[in-house]
Length: 122
Image 1: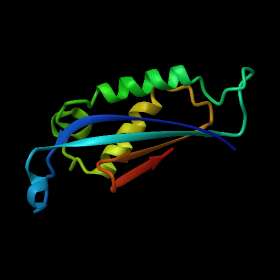
Image 2: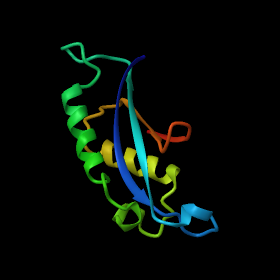
Image 3: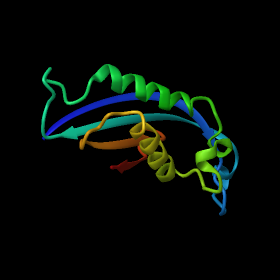
Image 4: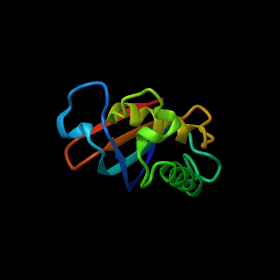
C-alpha cells in the first residue's frame, strides 16, 4: 500500500467540561500538530496517490476553521467535551469532506503537545 503524509502546526484554545479536570477546566491554548496520512493501493496516471497541492489546500482550510479559536464555541463541538479524541474525529471528518479520496484511507493524528496525541481513521 502507498502512503502519503503531511503535517502542520496551529494554535487553538479550549476548556474541558463535564468533570473536575483541574486547570484543564479553564480556557487555555494548545500548540497542536496535525499529521495527515492517506493510504491506497493504486496511484493515478501521474504517479500520485493524491494531488498533494489539493491535500495541502484542504488541510489549510480545515486548520483555518480552528486556528486561534476556542473549540467550545464552534458548532462541531456543541454539547461535546472538546477532548483530543473528539477533536481528532471532527478534524478528520471535516478534512474528509474536502478530499476526493475514491476509496483511499484517511487518518488524522492530532498532537496537543510533544508527548500526547489521539488519532482517528476512516
